[in-house]
Length: 124
Image (tube, rainbow, N blue to C red; front, top):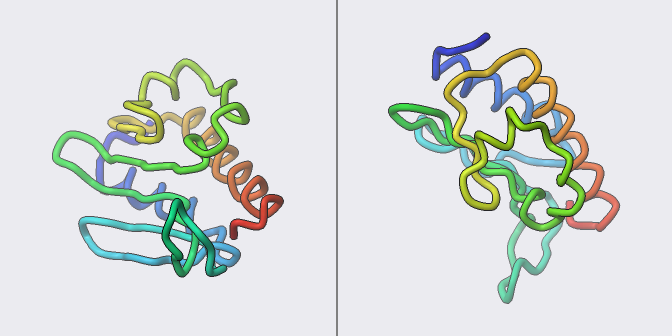
């Protein structure tokens, strides 16, 4: 079980980086790691250079994992485990304090599923 926040942050970033391409790193700093698609598209009412996918933001007590597919395609992620659901605050933000092997595996699968959904929908 990972409890070191910097190790959790690095693990989450690596999970996302494995999917570049079709994703690309849009921001990378100590405060924010963000990935998005590479296709110019409409997001809401504005044109963006790539559809937002996810962010990793370290905080003092946890690591925030913002995962947009769970917001845009909520029905596709209704079956997440209770352990992962406890980390979900709001509609798309996970507060991760501890990363068990099971949780790590589930987040990996969730990211893969999100990439597949966004590819099928032509968003990335």
